[in-house]
Image (cartoon, rainbow over all chains, first blue to last red; front, side):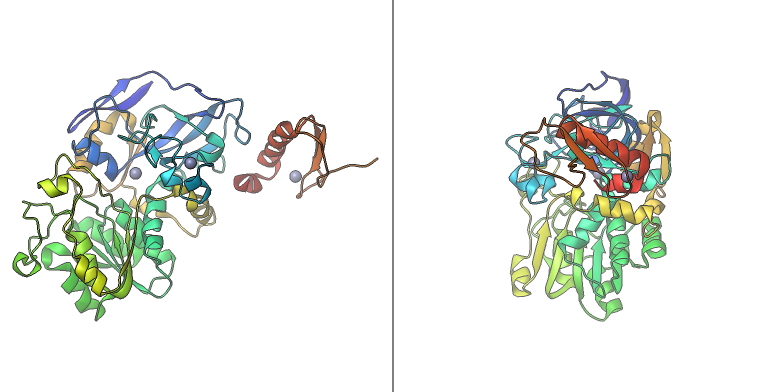
Amino acid sequence: MKAVVYQGPYDVAVEDVDEPEIEHPNDVVVDITTSCICGSDLHMYEGRTAAEEGIIFGHENMGVVSEVGEAVSTLEEGDRVVMPFNVSCGFCQNCEEGYTGFCTNVNPGFAGGAYGYVAMGPYPGGQAEKLRVPYADHNALKLPEGREHEDAFALLADIFPTGWHGTELANLESGESVAIFGAGPVGLMAAYSAKLKGAAEIYVVDQVPSRLELAEEHCDAHPIDFSEGDPVDQIIEEHGGMVDKGVDAVGYQATDPDDVDTETEDYSYQPAKENPAVVINNLIRVVRPTGELGIPGLYVPEDPGAPDDMAAQGRLGIDFGKFFEKGLKCGTGQCNVKEYNRYLRDMIIEGRADPTWVVSHRVDLEEAPEMYEAFDAREEGVTKVLLEP
Amino acid sequence: MVTYRRGGHVQGGDEAVERGCDLCEWHCVADGYPELVSRYQSHLRAEHPKAWLRV
Ligand SMILES: [Zn+2]
Ligand SMILES: [Zn+2]
Ligand SMILES: [Zn+2]
């Protein structure tokens, strides 16, 4: 079958690979109908991880069950399903407590598994014609049959729940104000989640005009362009003070705003363009005392492409004194997709939510290499790319 | 005849079991729980697709 295979930094190719098979009675095999390219694929694509060539990419997968292991009770051939990007068992301590992003059984020695991702276990990705799904009764979310809501349901694999998770990590409640850093797909989904939850004011920070426009148009957000000046000052001026909650949807590959006065901010690092702590420090400044930060943006314990030695070890120059002084709270970590995906699915089915405005492209799997290049270049208008085998 | 369409005591997972659907008159007698579970899923998938999404 055809699959998107990592060849090395800035290089993926569509290659012929072996088809997945049932390896355990709990498995199903899914014929992929949609698989998305994600910002976190770019971390591997750019050579910013230990990913080795040969990895099949794709952790945002949906499709139709084509083979069923004999121990699977609730699924049959022909069932339409979407898989959380997390692979989890359902019965370890973390899974039982709802933290399926931190399953200790699917990737022994590490808490958390995923499809098509470096160090996340032996689970080839779904940017391919077929995907093997382990613990399938647990890992496949059932969908109504047919092709309706195909794009929206595909976003249930990761970015819609992950954006929602960002607001949950910050305990965002109706009527509160929130600053969301990053208007990539996850930031936009966090802003959309904030709108769905009834936030009073939503500020979205980025420097790509088309992304800020999406936030304004679909999330009723105030766009904050950090290339036009310190984003914290801009938010405080527009809001008339600090906001209640903050979400970091950027992660460690944050760009240092050119306009930030590094003499007064005195960031510990002096990288050329990236400052892995800049977003967290901006959140510490912009969230009011006793407020809460949600950090679903990816940070890593090792970064081969880091701007300096400290960051290479995942150590950031966080303004912890200010964080403590303000009595802030902070939630971190990847999304436990199963915590939210069925509820968000039902909101889509009932027409309460439709996140498809974030999708910019649906293309043939064969076009993956060009789309990776365009998405990586943050080309205007390339926000979320869906691949169809 | 005593039936157990709303559940009843059985000694083991492979004992014959009978169970009904909450949403219609459908019921089934199966040779054990594993079979009952998949027949119940099949019934919901076919007759009550919205309920099937939730179980
Ligand atoms: Zn993703
Ligand atoms: Zn587990
Ligand atoms: Zn029924």
